[in-house]
Length: 192
Image (tube, helix red, strand yellow):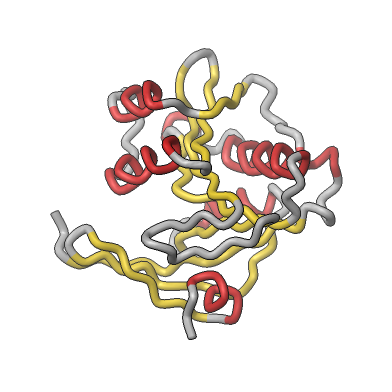
C-alpha cells in the first residue's frame, strides 16, 4: 500500500441544453445499461479481467446505498463499464463536492480493458446525460485524471467541454484530500 499518492484531475462540463437530443443516446447498440444493486457490487469485485481500482470498489457501495447511483454497462452479459453518478446536493468525501439541484457529477468510471477503444466510455456518458436530461438536470460534470488522454478524448466525443479548472486529489494512507485550482473547482470543492 502506498503511503502517499496524488493526481491532477481536470473538470469537464456538459451543458445539456446545448447538446443535440440525438447525441444523447447510446451509439454502441449492443450495450445494455442498468443501475447497480448490492448484489452487483460483489460481481464487480470478482469479475474476471475487471481490474478496477480498490478505491472505486470502496466508494461504489456509497453510490448504491444513497440517492446517488452506480451505472453498470453489459455486453452479452459481461460487465464492461461501471461509473458513479452523484446528483443534486449530495456530497462525496465528507462534502467536498457541492452540487446544485439541477447538476450531476459523473465519477469513478471504469471500462473493462478488453473492451477499451470501442466507444463504450462516450456511449456511457451520453446515456447518463440523456437519462438525466429527461429527469430535469441541466448541467453535468466529469473529472478526468490528466494522464488519461483516452478518457479526455471520450469525454470530448460525448459532448463535454474542458472547463480549464482542475484540482489535485491527494491520498495519504487511504484518506483523500483535495486542493482546488480555478474558479469552477473552487466553487465545486468549497475553497475560499
